[in-house]
Length: 140
Image (cartoon, rainbow, N blue to C red; front, side, top):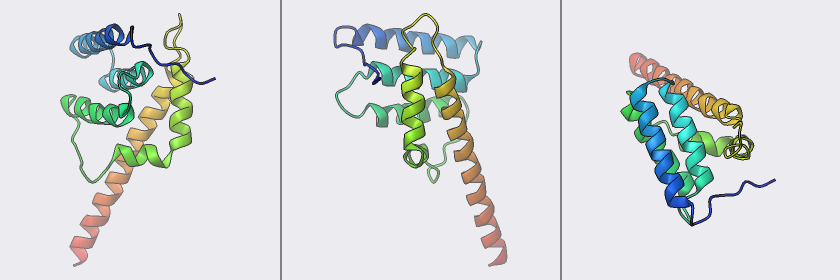
């Protein structure tokens, strides 16, 4: 089953609802910021407000949210490359969660798991690059 995006009629309202929800959740602090960011991303992609570029925009917004949440930006470590390297898993997690978003009991687990694993892998790869560079510099 392929997920259905929002119709043009509902897109503005759903987008406003998502923005308001995200702002309220981040301000309240009841949920970890990474969970709020992940829910924003998967819901934004389900709404699919633009004809093209929704995925790229979601990754830009992810970086913005991460920066605002206090996470450092590392220009030499890309979430984009993480998604590219795990494309099948990305789309599978996205579809599994998006099928349930508008239901009574959304299943956030597939997307949350993928999103958090991707961030962890990105962090681990960055750590490896930094260690390798420090070792290279100290032996030079």
